[in-house]
Length: 146
Image 1 (cartoon, helix red, strand yellow):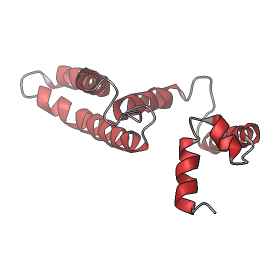
Image 2 (cartoon, one colour):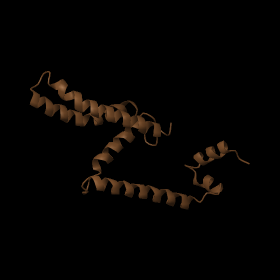
Image 3 (tube, helix red, strand yellow):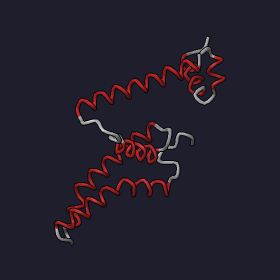
Image 4 (cartoon, one colour):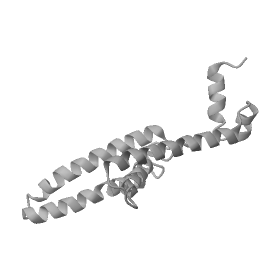
């Protein structure tokens, strides 16, 4: 009899080895189909819920996808802990940049120009953060394959 801990370790190892997980009696094709269907169903449900609150148009999810890409790259592809930290970093940097950069630029620019420059730089701040992090850690903050 295999203990739950050992079985869990074997199943986690089976994420990258389909033959091993299949040897444990799991139908891989059926499992992947069910997981894909569940993900597609949740995406459809989310779309229906958002469609009830906002106007539906082509490309309405692109800003969210771009932010999700930045979060995943900053955190490290495949790392849940990295995605959490990346989301927190992106959220804090974006919010603080939008609030404080226009105030900072008002110290040495006319207010109308400071607002425009501060807003433009605040929009670029998360991409600058991503570039800085990738310059020092090319795989992101927490790589899943270290």
